[in-house]
Image 1 (cartoon, rainbow, N blue to C red):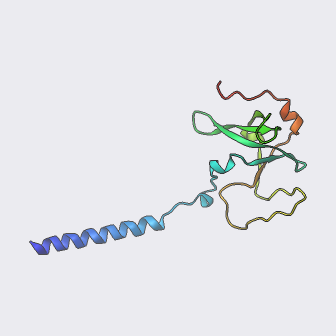
Image 2: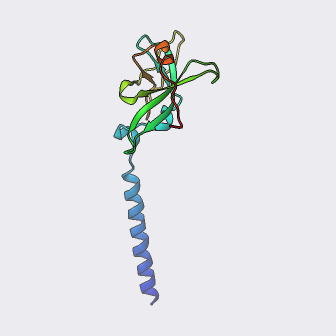
Image 3: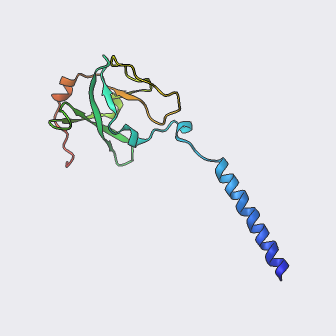
Length: 138
């Protein structure tokens, strides 16, 4: 009887060890799949084609299928006061992995990131300010 219990325990221990070893070797990574962390896109700077900061991402608006439809960009203001939020179609944004150069020296990491450095939108700050304010409640 004891021999059967010991044999069953040994078999269970071997099966558990094999399952743990298998699950650790099949780990998925975002960078390998080309995926981005959505939380890293929030507050990301948005630049125009002339490398001027025109705002930052405030919110990602998803459609019912879970795809990002629009990006809400905060424009203008100072320390959050007087900021104007506008919605821009996600497809209008281009993404850059290269750090924006604003005249000051910036260090860039060479590690694999799961998000871009910044977004680029073909618009000026004044064009964005003239767009209608985005209403979150509708």
